[in-house]
Length: 428
Image (cartoon, rainbow, N blue to C red; front, side, top):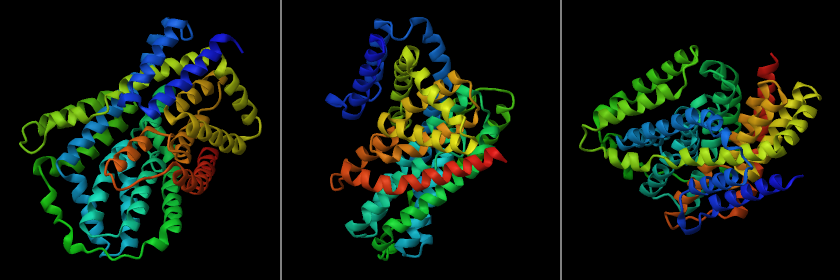
């Protein structure tokens, strides 16, 4: 093990700790940029590879930022609040029905509007609904934890559902429809298993009748009628555009970014939507987080990590397709849980390509890095942002001990069921 390899591991560890601890409340994008610069200065990552790295990250990063901007505009218009209130009213006051319906809503939003968008939008909405309906404090944790859990575990059906998916599909040039053909069924199993596990875990707490008369009228939360009315058809149009342009190998960012700009232009005429606020809240830090982290990960791979992980993957592939998919997925989920899923998926992709293995392992990498992060609070940026948004309320605290305990109970069965389904889909 050479000195530069050890140095790359130390830089990576320091970067992850800085991202999680955020000393002096610095943005999460700055530690990877600093770590990446150190890797370039020390020669851990060759300077000539910067262009290669940029070619890998630009499409996925700008696609993700565009999707979040699009999601934030729809929320500013009141679209998601309207839908959530409708779902709760449909439950007829039953906390059990509302619990199930909000988890279903969370899985739909995660699939269509990305996990970070679903978590950041739905968490404050559900908190507000619980507060309006005079729900007991014992209900807050089951509802809010379930929203945070489903947003990640249900984020694999489409390329756009998770930055992990976008990075992997972009790296291996998997177009939109081909990706969906493989991942739709595993994603449905992941969502269904998550719902079942969450219901089993929290069912005894769900014995409260919501006071629906205290809920705002769904129509009262609509702030912009024009944006609200075009939300569904415009989303369907974008999905169709992603599918069609994928056949011509057009980068998905070429559709997502113009789509977000068009919606920004339409919302700019509104007096109720603050477009400057939307742009300010957009996850621009993801741009330099992705670039900086890839520089670090690329350097780790260049110094020997790719070869080590590739050897393990080659060995697992020799055990047969079932063992290869399931065990590789478990390995990727373990890496996601301890490293965070963005560097983990990057390392996984580089190692799969280095070993020249089947693209089926790329899908196992997606599953492992979409679901595996739920083992620990540091597994994904979405979870870190979710915990931060909850603790900002000041009256809810999710300890690491509680998260690890519940996360381990829920995550393993969901992960195994999804990986087995993925093996079935790829084997047929």
